Image (cartoon, rainbow, N blue to C red; front, side, top):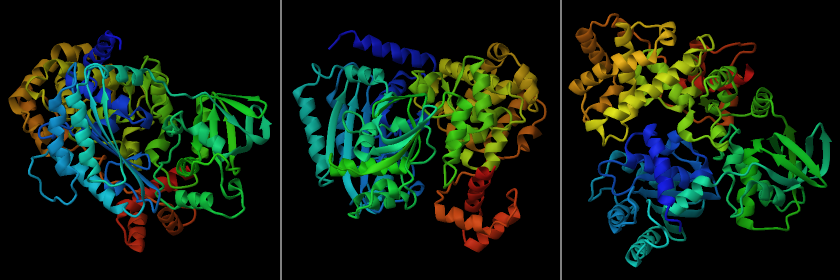
Length: 631
């Protein structure tokens, strides 16, 4: 193995530390980098990766726990519906150390933790574990219990990542301890696949350099073509080859533009699997709507179509069903076919319209569908004029080779907008992507009537305060959520100090000089925070009462006017509970909406919720789907 690999890894880590991505702590940066590479095939966002971190005090020697059910990341048990059969449960337990060699202590720390957490007969633990790790254990327990009758396979991966060499520096004792952990886990899960792997600098670099393949070939028969767009039939075995890699793993990245989940939250996937497993002599394509593929270019060579920059934008459930069926049946002699539509277009707006049009017939995730909104394209355009990359479509820029730390996500922008424009720094602390599923909340942030020049300024301010906090972290060094907790208040008070008022406007924000804040505000604000906030009560900064009190104290100290702008700021980002809506519920709500109703109303929401005996918020979220698609 090349001795200089460690310098390449350190260079990548140093670059991310300098950008405080996700923090200025070298260990935390290495942890996120390692998890990002290990789970690269799942195309997870940075927010997804960080949400699975259990690192911190009482972490039991574990840094990340990822749970996937049928390829979908599970964050909360309420967010999923349990498959009736053919459920694949995958668990990744990862420990990361910035050390330059593999240490026995890292494995020794995990053994008592795994002995307790994977023993589902235990309700109480001898060890002390933080809330994050207990939450993940409870999710795993609930999923395992609820999928008991449907589980076809359980895969448990325990991975140890560091900057050491895999080949020369893993001693026999460490390998033996790994085998001990493998035997321990197999004792809890019968008929499971348990993998223990050591990820050193060589593997990390290989994963880092490994780029997804978007240019692939597909065989089609019975083809109709027009302007390099094709409609034809493909054998399901040939389509399986398109969507899987050399190891037979699903190419998740081919579905980035698709707005649905793999989970099959209704009976669609089950019905498709039924038709695949049926013994009736009816070809599959006659029973299925097929697949839509969007490409930059398509060239026909005989019966093979060479596809450039593939994105499968419709037919995700069908694709998953074919993948799962052929993965388990291993048949090369299946002559059934699937209908394929191939659409060629390089125009971004046209591509977005096609994505929206092909995904508006069933319940969808609006957070993904919003990627095609005009306001999102406008934000991307204005940021690109400032050489900034806006990730309105998840993984789009990542797949083009742009480092994750250079990409601005919608949730990052939303948090800064909530902090400065809505004057809700406390709400920015806990804001999650799900807010985009609520029409009023989404419209409150991504408002097309707001001056478009606010967005690059918010990015500059966000990066400026992150850079400052990177330099002064100090006593908060061990706080894993330091930036998300303290960044909103720090930025809000700094801007208020510059204007000596809490009632600054969008125009004020656009006109301000970021250098003025850096030179004249941050130091005073940070000293105030050090005097009034410590590492024990940093989590309280999500409380409006606490934040208003701190703003009041700051106003008295520095003669800041208009405290009422903070006190009376309307919490338009109110809802935290997000319901998963199936097709039947959407249809039931739609049936109760009077004909020619143009917009949702509170009275209609309450009336329908009484009629269906459900939470009004669930009806309101159904409205967001129905009226958004109608628009």
